[in-house]
Length: 155
Image (tube, rainbow, N blue to C red; front, side, top):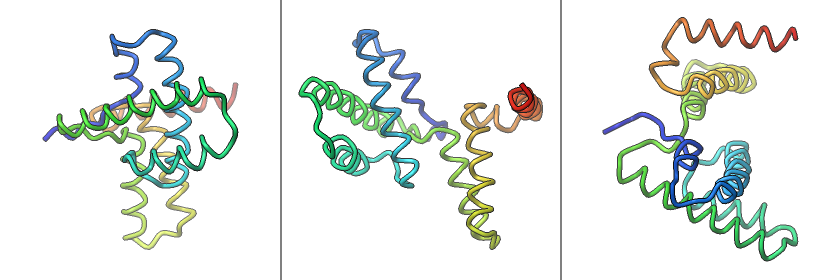
């Protein structure tokens, strides 16, 4: 089984059956969904999408064209999840997987929740930046990330 994480953003961008405008619209909605889902501590499953639709999308009055476009984006995401499952790809990105691992390991070691959240937040940002498990384990990439972070902080 392939345990490398899938990246819906890369797959969306590589989709040949969507226009650039559709990719942009889908990306907007799916980024909103992913941000919401991670804050809620939910996985990328269909049940999370249904809850997101009910709590975030349908909770306010929306234009018909918005609902239609956003529903298309969610259907694309559902097909993407099915494709990941059929190919044995993990739909959670590297940052999300590392975040979860730190939270679990920190709990086993008795770390306070706030400490685990802080550590997990940092490693998730690094994992999202690095992208792959090979890159995450690279000392050179970690040093590069730290250097980039310091430059941004100072400048």
